[in-house]
Amino acid sequence: MKTLIRLLGVFVLVAIFLFPNSALVSGSEDWVVYMSVTTDPNVGSVPGGGSNFGFGARDGASDGYNSGEGDEIAPPDPMAGINAYFYYPANPPFQKNLITSVTGAAASITWPLVVKMVGETGGAEMTISWPDISSVPASYIVLELQDTGGTTLADMRSVDQYTFSAFQGQTYNYQIRAEVEEIPEYDLTIDSTDGGEVTTPGEGVFTYDEGTVVDLVATPGAGYRFDEWTGDVGTIADVNAASTNIIMNGDYSITANFVALYDLTISSTNGGLVTAPGEGTSTYDEGTVVNLVATPDSGYRFDEWTGDAGTIADVDAATTTIVMNGDYSITANFEEVPPSPVGRFIATAAYGTPMAKEIEILREFRDEYLLTSPVGQTLVDLYYRFSPPMAEFITEHPSLKPIVRAGLVPAVAMSTVAVNTTPAEKAAIIGLLVLVSVALAVWAKRRRDRGTEYA
Picture: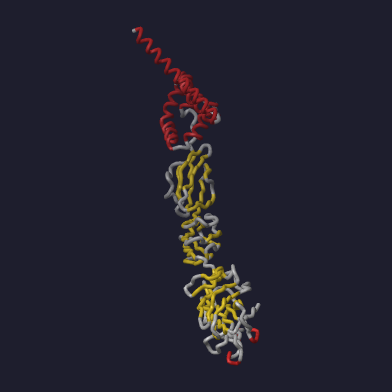
């Protein structure tokens, strides 16, 4: 709204807005604030009812008078009989509204303001007032009337006027300063490892206002997967997610990390299978250590791993590992265990038939425990090598069979425990055997000590 400047008395009051020193501000601007000047005491009246003046900003405006931009012209030359006017030292000299140009972002605008009393001698209390500043954008958190040294005379958002003593012929210099809120800016530096890229917002250095939430999207290439974000990740919502965001509260540098993926293809020959991790094709991160377990069928034993076996820890072990540094294809190889001819081995010769229950127990123990380890396989090979001549001797001397069967009782018993009991039962039996062994040792020691005393 426009407020009339009432110049009371025979003084001539001059309000001069010089060309404003302006820095550009952000956003669309089109506003003006009108001000009024009064004097006390009231010593007269102003012919013509006075006028108004103001300050403001408009996108694309030119500094200085321009009627096409809405600038207003004061009354004509004061010599025409009007004793109240606004003097502006440009041509034309009677500009009333000074609109500063606004075309972009900046922190502040400053309008120099000159107030002058001319006319008859004397003085008065002069009051400059601004009854309505609602048109000033809220982004200007500072709006002040200052002296030319920058000292604040009035916070224009808290009070609506400023009074000072004015005297004829004196010039009073002030300025109005509007400052927008300064929001800190921070740099976000983004890069990535081999195997992918950051597609949102991209890679490089980006500048954002403080508090900005920036979306992040990391896109892996073929044969890779996103792993994690590293660096200044304190404000990243989820460092393990390829699509996430970061809040800009400082200068940050972050990296999107990608991991290569490799396929492990596993197969086996007849006579067994790979039980861990299984057979077929599985995908692993680069550097993963994969456990391998090859399990032979009954009557077979594990032989070796073949194929891309360069990173297998032990190619001769049924239970081993492989390190995934590439795409690998491996095979677990099994071989058939030669059957035990009747009468050619000690146990068969002792029991007289390969179908004996004790021999079945010994055979199960061999397949489940001995043939699954290199040491066990060696023991079985030694047995097969040296057993036939001994078995032939037992066959030729039947009276030895009961003695040999008695000698095999511990082996059959141990095999029975290993094959036919649960882990808990095995532990209990082993504990009992340990206790019996300790008791026998104590008894033997006491017997020996007692014999020494009698001697």
